[in-house]
Structures are given as C-alpha cells and as structure tokens.
Amino acid sequence: MSKIRRARQWAGRRRLLAGCTAAEQPQYEWDHPARRGVSVLPHDTPLIATIVAGLGLAFILGLIAQRLRLPSIAGYLMAGVAIGPFTPGFVADGKLATELAEIGVILLMFGVGLHFSLKDLLSVKTIAVPGALGQIAVATAMGVGLALLMGWSLGAGLIFGLALSVASTVVLLRALQDRRLVETDRGRIAVGWLIVEDLVMVLTLVLIPPLAGLLGGRSSVTPATGEGPASGWLETLLGVTGLWGTLGVTALKVSAFVALMLVIGRKAIPWLLHYVAHTGSRELFRLAVLAIALGVAFGATHLFAVSFALGAFFAGMVLAESELSQQAARETLPLRDAFAVLFFVSVGMLFNPGVLVTEPLTVLATFLIIVLGKSAAAYLIVRAFGHSNLVALTIAASLAQIGEFSFILAVLGVQLDIMPARGRDLIVAGALLSILVNPLIFLQLDRMTRRAAAEEAKAKVPAPPAPGETPAALTGHAVIVGHGRVGSRIAEALKAANVPLLVIEDDEANVEALKARGIQAISGVAGEESALEQLNLPAAKWLISAIPDPFEAGNLIERARKANPSIRVMARAHTDAEVDYLKGLGAELVVMGEDEIARRIIKDVLPLG
Image (tube, rainbow, N blue to C red; front, side):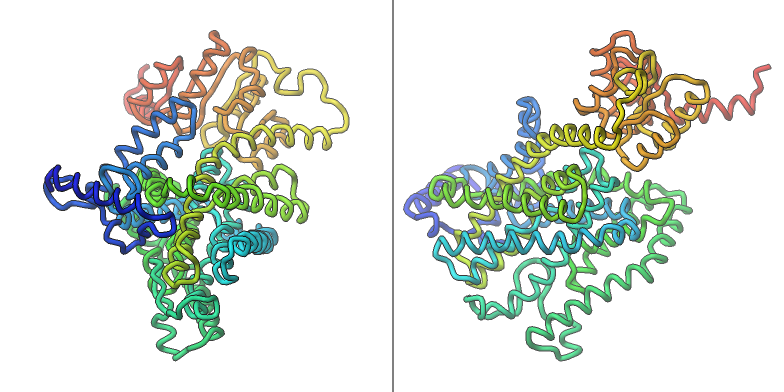
C-alpha cells in the first residue's frame, strides 16, 4: 500500500470521526473491518505485524515507564493505544491481538493451577464462594444505579454492572506473582475468589442471549463472545429449550468438565507428561506442556462452554500432583510473560481517548465503582467472615480492576442491542484506568500491610520482646533469602553451628513453621523496601541468596552492597551468564549447581589423594 493511499485513508477517517459525537463514532467490534488494521508491510501479514508492533512498542514504552518509576503496565497499555484504531498511524489487527492475549490468559491460569491443588481450592470455599457472589451483587447494583441515572434501561444497567463486577485474571495474578503471594493464604483466597467469578461469568454469558428480549434487546441464541455457542451438542441431544433448560444444561456441562478432569484427567495428564519426560527430549516435554494447557482450554470451551481460563486452570491443577509440575511451570514461563504483555496491548487498543473529553464525569463514576465501590464491598465481606485486616486489604486491592470478561460482556450487550455503545466505551475506559492504577494501589497496600502486620504482631505478643530477639537487634548475622530446597539446607547447617540467622521467605506458612522451630524469619519479598528495613543489612555479616530468580537476586545484592559495603554476598545461579551478572553486581561467591555436581563426581572418580 502506497504512502499516498495510506495518507488518504487516514485523512478520510479523521474527517469521519471529527463530524461525529462519541456515541455516533464507528464502533470497533471484533468483526468490524476497521479492526483488521492497515498493513504497512509489502505483504499481507497481519499476524506478524500485530506481534512485532505490539511487543516492540510495548518494550520501548515499558522501558520508558520503568525509567520514570511508573508501572511497566502503563507502557504496555499506551502501546496498545498507539497502535489502536483511535490514534493516527499503523492500526494493528484487534481481533488477532485479542486472540494472542487469550493464549497468555490460558498459560497464566495453567501456571496458577500448577501451584494450586484441589485441597487449596476447597480450603477457601467458605469465603471465596459467598464473598465473590456478594461482591458481584454489590458491584452490579452500583452499576445499575449509575446506568439508571444516565437514563438507560434496567437490562442495560444489569449488563453494565456485571461487567464492572468481575476482575481481570491477568492483572490479579500478575500482582500476586510479583509479590510471591499466590501460595499464601491471601493468594489462595484471591485465586479461589477469581475462579468463582469466572464460573458466574460463564453462566451469565450463556443466559444473556435467551434473555435478551426480556432485557430490552433483540432475541438471539448465538453470542459472538468467542466463548462458544449458547446452543451446543448437549442442548441438541437433549432437545432442551427455555431458560431453566439452558440453566440446567450449563450446570451439567460445567459439572461434566470438572468430573472429567478430576477423575480421568487427574491420571491421564500426569501419566502423559511422565511418559514424555522418559523420552529424554526437553523439546518434546515443552511441547507436551503447551499442548496440554492449550488443548484442555480449547476443548473445555468448545465442548463444555467453560471459559479458556477456567479450563487451563483445571489442567494445571490436575498436573500439580505430578513431581514434574515445577518443571512444567518453568517451561511455560517465557511464553506466558510475552503473551501477558499482548493482553495489556489489546486492552489499550480498545480505548478511545475521546471518551475522557466527551464524558469525563461518567468515566470518573465508572472508575470509582471499580476501584472504590467494589473494593470496599470485598473488604467488608472478608472482614465479616472473620479474616484479618491484612487479608481483607489484599483481596480488596486484587479486585480493584476489571478485564477480559468485562470486554466480552460489553461487546455482547452492544451486539444484542441491550446496552448502548457508549456503555462499552465507559467499560473500556474504566478497565484501562483501573489497570493503570492497580499497581499503585498495591504499592499503597504494601505500606498499609506493614502497619497492619505490626499492629497484629503487637496484639498477639503482649510483652515486648527481649533484646536480641527482633530482626532489627541482630548483629553479625546471616540473612538467608528463600527457604526452599537450597535455603532450608543452609539454614539447618547454620542453626546447628549457632550462627545468628534471619530468613526471609514469601510463604507465610513456612515463616510460621520456622518461628515455631526457633529460627527468626520474616514474611515478604526481599527486594521490597519494607523487607529490607527488617533485615538490618548494615549490621549483617553474610547475605545468602538461595532464590532461583537472578533478577530478583541481583536487585537485592545491589541494594545490600549500598547498605553494607563489607557484607559477604553469596548466591546461586543456573548459567554462566547468571554467574557473571551476579558477580558484576557485587556477589563474592556464586555457586552453579552443574559445577558442584561435576566437582563431586570428579572427586569420586578421580581421588585426589
């Protein structure tokens, strides 16, 4: 396509938009021609163009955001706005970007399932089920209230409120994983809450089309949501019609999928992965993991009308019982992160900046419902069930945003003429702003939880601790970061040698177990400011990083060197590049597992006298 032709196309589009109000502007549905994008490549390669433009621009703007001390997510979202249909220049394929982002959601939920057993899920059902249902009801009611104030129908308000009530899978899990909270009690409640929300949204997407006439729209039985048809093989087989029939069939499908995964998948999936592992091919193992995650998610959606995210979660959960689950998680990590970035880019592409100018008050009201109203409801519900202030604050912050299901509901509501098109613009604007603000909310949460934890600790221990018993009073001590397979062995050896010891670990249950055994420990992520303050690094003699993540370890080592130039720093690594990286930041000793294994074998094979 020539530059002259592209210029004419853009000029025409600009004239069209200039003469329209916000409600009259072209609506970019998944199947709208404008969403297919304008290719600037010599060949028609929209998939390559979308990936290159999305990831490339996300990298540049994410790096700029990081340098400005803003969340990287801000850069990713702005990258989406830049290549979206509402800004000049290249327009990426929105449908392709959304499908690529869905792969990220699948891999993310698969990874969560690998760390989330059925026992964990059942352990939080008493709070996750009533909590999620109550929070959805409150947020939906607030959305209905705002819609009625804007003069919409009750049906439009119901769709609008439901879209504001459900949190984004990607944003919630990214926040929990960044703070290593997924395997804590707070993380399990948040993930369980998320699963209940997903189940409610699956049911909602099935029920809206047959109810469209009652909700003020046009009757339809085929939602264009990407989640599969409302009328499928089981409905045809049973000849089911009507609301209660649809509801019953949906419940039957979800139950059949869960039963299939827990009875057959629980044995077949681990067996298959073990079989592949015995071939000795890492390439086949990685391929098997991806095939299981994507295949189960796809099959769950098209055979059982279950969401991609929920299907992938159960695939990971049944695989969690295998001893290869950790390896499977590592194999999916790079792809998961890359496609998660594309999710944020796809959100940015949906955003029309013009809505901030034409309807600032309604955008603000939508944003406040998501960030304040919904979070306040979640906080009060969690507290009402007797959980601590710390748990309630974490759940409230986790849910202060909306995402994937919100967009699907918005598109469905507009397509069925239940909700006006401006409702979708408000939902996308609210999603973008809430996703942008959510990392800042978590930063504030980090400060609030430090105070809450200090107050709870003071309430549990009536008498002040004796000198030398608190981490701040330790001197000449060893700080061990991480209490996994490596850290636990080091801690045992140092404790046996009576070396003053302080362990920092992100698993709260592990921390409590350490304290019960007389080992001083704190809960948190080592790189956070709050954790560094408790480590008393200026008075420490050793810093031992036993965590596998070189970037997190490198950040800690760099900051420890600034706090105490004389501290001895030791770390673990997996590659020669990681060894060089950590030594360059100030580590005196970096141990690579392969070197130590080789050294031990050589010592046994070739005695040195």
